[in-house]
Length: 234
Ligand code: CA
Image (cartoon, rainbow, N blue to C red):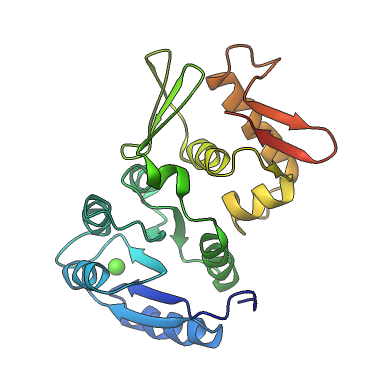
């Protein structure tokens, strides 16, 4: 963890695999985080509602309440703590569901510890979800984004985005007006996963334009800033 924040960062780890709880707790404490843990969904939800945390690591497969249910209830309770979900490799569909119910990122088990740390750091650094928090919907041009249901529509028609496209769009909205370099987008939206190249960013931006801009060749909202990256002007 870098030293730009002297304030302690409190993590709630909701996970039932004892070995993983021990390993993660040790490692995260070494990184300077304060770590509390809960070993089932009900207990985890109760703690997350009762105490202030800066980050939550949430396993999907949990006794007494699934990670999905925990996340959904947290968001309904108005608790906006960033949530990193842990899913099993076989639960591909879970990633999309997780993001739709308000998780901020996901990681597939088994994961690399460095990757987990990078994701947590990105979530911690990410500006408070100002746009998403102040209002649950955001409108630009003919595009309507409903953050609560992760639903996007253009001119009244539903637009289907992949989980990553949705994450990217949300990040653009949260950082509208800022010049965003490809490296920063990779670090904050993709995290450490598979170290994609900056070309990945361009490809996803092109897809988003295709789905959201009236004329993708002459975008009004998702702008390229020559030599620097991108800027969202919505
Ligand atoms: Ca589990």
